[in-house]
Amino acid sequence: MKDMIMILKKFLLSSCLIMSSLQAQNRVGLDVNSQDIELLGSIDLNTLIGYVDSTTYSLDINYLRTDSRDMTQFSLLGRNSLQSVESVSLALGFSSVLASNFLAFPFILKANYILPLMDVIPTTSINTSFAYAPKVLSLRDANNYFEWRLEADMEVIYNVHAFVGYRYIDTQYEKLDKTFNKSAYFGLKLNF
Image (tube, rainbow, N blue to C red; front, side):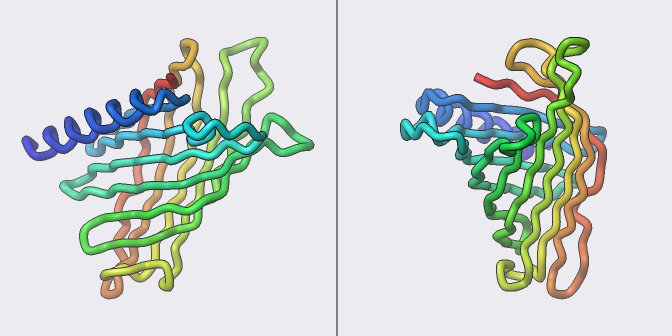
């Protein structure tokens, strides 16, 4: 438990220092359930490099601690709204996933739909994501990697989002198939 607290402190401190020094549009978040904790961070690369376009590029960092196991994920994504349906945005990219004797480089697809209820309730959206790495993109003892998430998100205060979700993460090793995590969670995200 003491080691976990130290890891979380180091992660939060380094994330805050990096993001504040970049002075970009960023996001940090935390989600939990009775057994897991996940730290989230996102850096808007467009603001960082002064790139102006309709596509938003971001670097996302996630750390998941579950049942005495750790997983860290670094992702590079490009996101844009669909031309015909502006309330829907898609993101494509790739990632690196590190766990115990496991290294994979999955492709990622994320989708976001903003519900057309802004006159009735605060901005609410449904998000989903898929990540997959076949054997050729899986190293160490990894055979393949699959991740699926579904979230409902509401902006309860300006730039503060509450969310609930479900995640399924399968880390298939060469000698065994291991469901790393499948659980519901809730949390907060802060944009700044």
